[in-house]
Amino acid sequence: MSEQFWWAVARSGGILAWVLLAASVLWGLALSTKVLGRHPRANWLLDLHRFLGGLAVVFTGIHVLALVFDSWVEIGITQILVPFTSDYRPGAVAWGVVALYLLAAVEITSLLRKHLSRRAWKATHLASFPLFAVATLHGVLAGTDADGPLVVIMTATTAVVVGLTVLRIGQARSKRARTPVTRGRTRPPIEPRKMTNA
Image (cartoon, rainbow, N blue to C red; front, side, top):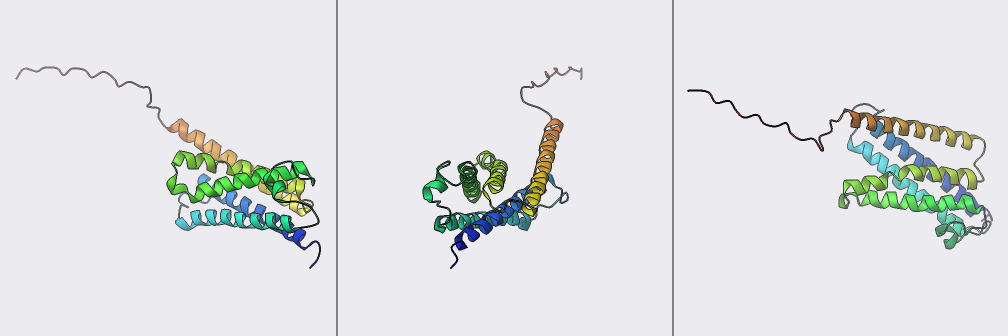
């Protein structure tokens, strides 16, 4: 077995994890912004979104395990779990550690969605956006393959994610503006009925 076998596995696993994460985020935004049409809420579409996220977890696990087994770059459990403890590009690897924790939070709460309030689930699920951002930073700054075509792909994908996110925020604000505010309003006084002679 080549000395760089595990390093190659780590690199390819990391790239695939990022691609799957990006696909999951894009698919979620496509559903929420309705760019796929007015009624794309079939169960299989939501299942595909969750499946892509689950696959991102699997390949992140492959990426992490391969780094532990690799002897070319010495990264152990401590470096994987604690930011800025790696001798290899400590800042870049720290972004990966943060991304690992965010990914775990998003996926665990997604699995436990039926047991959580909608507010708690939604607040945690919004961590998908900083997750995508820090995972992209980690890939660009720590990855030895982050040059040439890969940088172009990551930049273009990030631009689409940002564009759809801006669209989603605009849609949410527009919806709030159209919704009448009822809190704090008092009902108009009820006028007494006029008595009529029989």
